[in-house]
Image 1 (tube, one colour):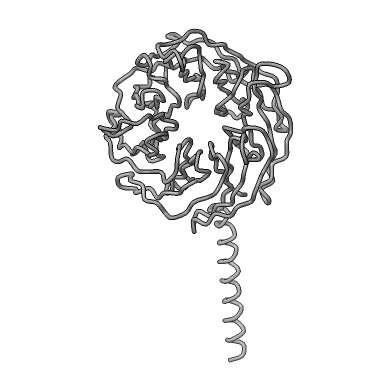
Image 2: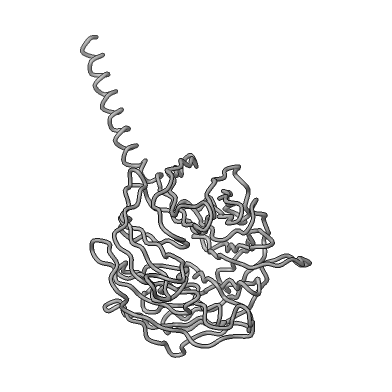
Length: 387
């Protein structure tokens, strides 16, 4: 009997150890860091960090990750070792330029350590993203009306620009489109092209991108046009690669495009409003995201202060309005879908609050979870695995 009990105990502890090891291996998959970029004109100090447990939806504040000026948009490299922020300012070291800051990430504390800072080559940089190799960062300079590419070194530091393109021209809105205003730039899925969204020109400028040298050269045709006065801001590709959607800030609309990925050609299909019929107030759209499932599209309205939800026909790319949901704050700027695809985090810039919503997997409708985070002037959200 004693021997039998001893063997049972041995088996019990063996099974317990295996379960513990299994849980230890799986648990990091549910653990993430959330970084928040802000505007620092008032009380914000820079970039803020949170721990996020996707299994429980628990959020733990880690405080200021790095003190830096106007880190309005962030990007995290493929290795999850480095974070990059544009510093949206008009003057950097005496030149008409903003800056780009490179940081190393401490996964335990969420703290960021500055590696180096380079000029963005244009005033008020407002967007940064990596090419698909992770070797180059692409930056859009809003007031400068230009785009630039920066090589990223093995140690995370940024080199001087490998490409720079100054946009030229204007459009019909004399207050907002008096000159070029580059607002977004990313490479396509195959990394052969880079698309830049210019609010001031009402154009999507397409460049051939060389991942060996980090160069940009005009594609043929060199751009796709939007309606005069649309004011395109950000773009989102559908996961199937067949379609692209542009949110138009000045027109409060979304324009759908067919995407010919082999030639880098975007063909306009149709445009749909992001605000309800009868809304008479002022409104500017900000962010656009396609759900990872490819079934839904979300866009933020600043003024109407809502998230517009659309369903997507995966065969035709057509959008159908599902709902407008109040964001429970003012001026919803950027928003982000969490890594599980279940939650949507909305940065309400003018009420210093990030509000969390649950995404219905069947129709895309949003329901408040009751969770909110106090962050001064939040404008950009980025998740990454904690380990």
